[in-house]
Image (cartoon, rainbow, N blue to C red; front, top):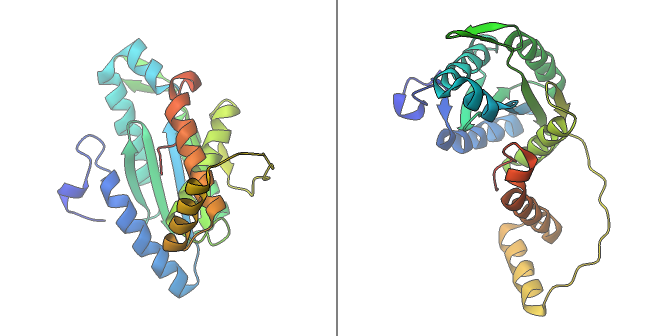
Length: 225
């Protein structure tokens, strides 16, 4: 476990968001060289906004601390936990398939859901999760984050309190119109990044949806990529 306090969130003692990308990129390179799986879990706390509103931010902080503590103590020693933002946590499982991670996270989900005294309030706290794994769900950081975030989104749509695995979503043809300049710039960018134009457009659409729907959904959507 990294002992550099600069990489740790003061409240939860988990790793900070800025540490995630370099850590995961290095772990992904190792997984590719060693031909081993690497699993990403995205998680957030159900109705966390209402916990803060109904019980106060002090209780909200205690909920964050307990969730982080359970994540840290109930996962393998090589697992890294990150506070990605607000009540959203990322967990990185080296040398772990998504099915193995699912079993671990389901046990953790049930543990967190047990009644627990947060200050003067006894609450049942529930978490939602999405899971994606290298190489089955993607070959790079951006795609694995997208897959895990989409799985988390499906969990939320189903009412939370559960876990969803990534899967190949059906592509639906839709007629759109772009200017010639836009298409030229899109093609150039895709060539420079060595990825497909379709993937760039999917990422842009995810960002657009996140920007305009956060308040309507009642929870924070996946962060822009």
